[in-house]
Length: 331
Image (cartoon, rainbow, N blue to C red; front, side, top):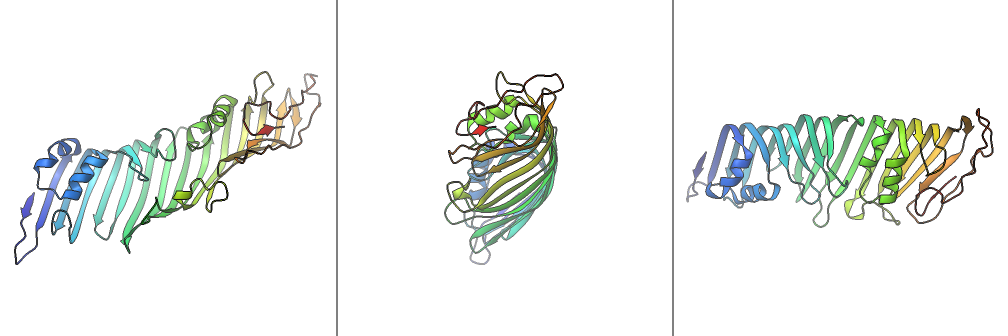
């Protein structure tokens, strides 16, 4: 590390190079190092931990107002605290190159977690996170482009792409798309956004006994200040998927639906499940529909009733409101 004080002839200059650097000890001694004030503040705010390697940093100008800066580093087992709209994480590995104009982040990670507390109730764990993101500063804003992010864990496999732009006031504007190629529906409740009510979350956690999501898509676009874009606010929060082989125990004391193939749709704060085919007591039923559309109104749809199954049992009619789902229904 070297630091040159400013003079009449030359500006101040900080240069740092290292082969290996542990972040937690650096946080402890940062107050005694000639670090730029913004760097010292970020160490306190984001509480980074993990290891940096093959790193360098050059800082031109005053510590609190650089005229230019640039750096790069590899990182492993990196963790940061989530702050505002910025996500946190742990166990992250990859590399970063940056300057005052922008930068590139590359992830090559195994056994990591992402923390998005404004979206999910708990951090999401992944066996694999591989991707590339770039950002640039333009007209006082930061533009982030997620070129690709491939992810996998025991519950799902998929890919995400998108863009984000910061705003002078508010959390900024996003346009994010994701596609799942496979998913375990018994774990779907873990990935519900936090504004989905607890009754719906419990209904999915207790009711889905088996099943796969053969394909699913996510679209999130708009000003995040209006998120989740309910009650007529502009923007899109939409999750759509197709499921197969589902066993659904939809209400206490009622026979479960088996071999259920359905379409699932989250839009804003609402959730609707439309079953194309299913069985009860071995008898085929169709046209099932259940959900909470997020508007407080009830929904219903016809269902085959009174059909005799292979066991010769009479199927009960399912009445609206019987399932433990407030402001919604199933038929």
